[in-house]
Length: 626
Image (cartoon, rainbow, N blue to C red; front, side, top):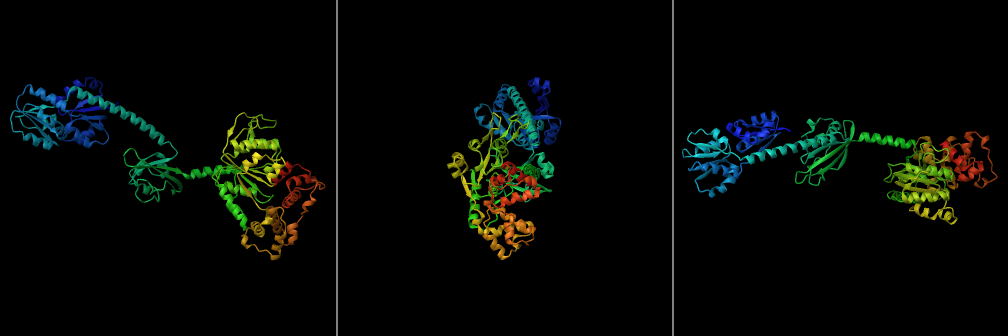
């Protein structure tokens, strides 16, 4: 613990006080001494330099030292009325004349109320500083009277006819003052420890912190703020925060802090920083403002890294509503409705023929929702067998089945956490799996295959079907309860044949994309556009895209019929009698055949059957080509 300096007015009081504080003096915790009353500021600096933690003084000495204090606390040993009465009683026992009591202004005010209680001559003299003390001593007319005052009065008095009696506090008062000083030092040490811990915490957080007052003056700053703002604490403290933060709002702070935005971003020294201002107030003190400073550049880099990883896994939605090209009024209404749906958390069921853009809508809904920063996971329910689809959706633990990874695998539901999962061709999902999917939607939790514990989820479900599910329910191919869980919101995408105005628009759009030019610059023969409008487009947008590719490949030399009908067989020709030996075809021809059949609007089931392969094998071939 630091030492205590106990200041007495005169040298002759030192041994008296040392005897009272014998144990403290012996331990070195208290040093009794005098000071030069004419040079209080210099004496205060000396005491600070000598390492004292608290300075105890009284009367005028206390006032002068306290006025000079800046770092070390000066504690007043109060001159109590009871101590003055005790001294007066002692003096009166040996002296019967008039007694003058010379006291500092604030002490005299408290004592004067008791003067009328005495039955002997008594007068109080007030003073405020050394000069006024001398003046008051000169006004005492009687000779050989007793003057009761502090030791300072004895030091400045140059009259020999006055008997000076030094006012001395009682032992209990002196010891109590020292006890309070010790408690103060203990609390100060504890506070210093807490401050050190707090400073250590503040200087090791990843955010810059600075505090400024209502006049924009910075009062506190941590080391991270120094780093981010590229300025030292010495320069920042007491500086105007508006000179530190570029384009800081110029109006003076009001009580509600409404004149300053709570959060804003500024670029400083090639670094993008985010500032957030929090007003706070302790009891009745002046309102202050805590500002947190973050390096947005690092956040952007981290976000980029996460997005790259998600992109590598194929868990990113690429499309937005602006990517849906249409001039059709019904489609525009549908897009507007889908945008409204995106704001809510309910499941969505999207109906549409093959090639109408069901996943385009699903991705757009995801990117317009609050989940846009989360993953978008798409799975085709018709592409995998029931057991394989279950392990892909739910994941599995180590040893769950033969061929399972030793470390297990997270399912697609887990990968979609805090994002969206798109269940395409939900109508093809096996009935046995539908009940398990229903539980995931209802409980928002999943259990891996082979596991005995559940994993909580936060996932939005969007499903798509190219078949009316109510018909599937009547045919006992789809669960009614799952249907109502998925059908919170419903969207029906019309086929392209019902959107005649979009046929030429989309053809030009895809052709322009292939040519690397604007769609507005693509010119088609009027007769060609007329032919486009008369075609059925069973493959919808996918077929239009293929036709645009053929047109581009042959530089528009083909006739309209060849561009549209190129290599297509009538849908009715694809039946059980159609057999194609893929082993005799090269990869290019194989791909062209599959794409051609898809573009015509023939279902994957029929194509797989015609090619003599499983639906799963067809799905793999399609994705391998992609």
